[in-house]
Image (spheres, rainbow, N blue to C red):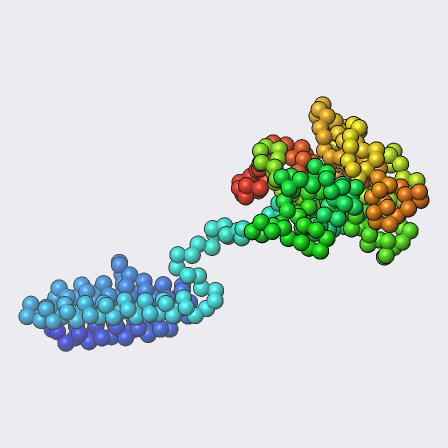
Length: 346
Ligand code: PHE
């Protein structure tokens, strides 16, 4: 075979292939065209390649070079058509993308177990008619001590037992003495009674307050310098200790279980009289969850209530303690270590 017809055949092949690739409307049509022209067995290129054997030896080199050029051109035309199909339609799938793989789950945030506990306690107490009140974590001595019947020389005010806010040795004065991080949520009793004197005089009070308190305790399995309390305050006419016990029993049965029993042990708090420690019988053991008592007449007087007319009870329970018992947590530090492996269990 002479050279020119061979070269003409190659030109024809190249333009046929180019047209077929350009005209392919989708991936299937393009693949069919690829088999027609580049198929390893019966592709048209293969056929023309076989004709190379019949070329005159003197023309072989020129024929071979042209054959390679055309092969390269056809491959390029195919790849161009392929990438144009791929880039065009939105239904096209990127090479390497496997639609059968499971999707990537977004990492969702998680509510901290103490926040979950606060929500739960709020819900239980809400069913008994207690509404939520709040107070600041930075307090003055009037609300943290004085109005709660804790006088100037009382050991509870010792700087070693409180976080007074001081800069460079000078205590911070926020108006009524040296500011401190509140050591108890009983401060909110005072704030609510002061506020209700104006907003709802003579109306009964039934509030809880859940929040952080601070004490300079060395951290161990049961102590942490910051923890949470649930304060309760009930003020009305003829409130009795039996009301207090009932509310706490109903609360314990709701939060810890129907079979939980409650016990009061005589105690002392400057702002309640009489005062008790509150124990719940949990899995056969009496465990102290906080303190309670009848609002001391001196507290009523400090906020302008007549102790001859009204009476009330107050309680303060440890939120971490409640949460830890319910969930079987044995070390309070786990709650605040920030270890997600621990926190994500709740
Ligand atoms: N504030 C007390 C404490 O932190 C608890 C308490 C609250 C006791 C209300 C009596 C009444 O220990």
